[in-house]
Image 1 (spheres, helix red, strand yellow):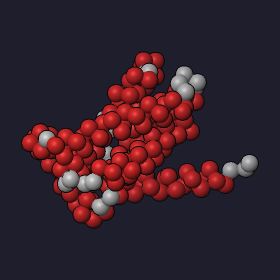
Image 2 (cartoon, rainbow, N blue to C red; image 1 turned 60 degrees about the vertical axis):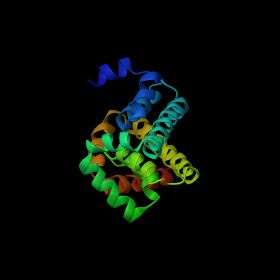
Image 3 (spheres, rainbow, N blue to C red; image 1 turned 135 degrees about the horizontal axis):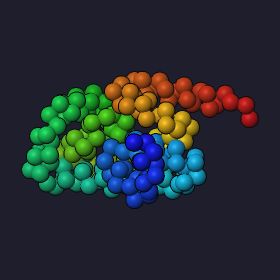
Length: 178
């Protein structure tokens, strides 16, 4: 399966994948950039662009088309409860980290739009969060190759594990000989 994906992967596929959740697609693109089949900075730029377009679209659906947003949220009852709890507990941080929380991305963006969160503040936090997301998962694919897919699936189930792993990765990176 991995070989098939790698053979047929392109910037267009990456863009479409990044409109959705996209972590595995980003990691694959990072791996392919290490093999020089794709350009690392182009991968990050395309993933960033797709994610921003997707998130802003979902935000505006929530803000201006509430009946459609409620219909879409109906299929995500469990995720919706999590997002509501996180919005009350963590506020704006949900915008920054929602792409790192598996299965909650679409409900989070719709809920933020429904809540009439100010667009200016939303887009600033969104740019920061999507930049972190695209750089993180592309770099994981670049550094760890095929092994990263198992790690991503595990991390999507446990956000704390992802945070600890990112801190460890930073420590290793900073402590390497120059």
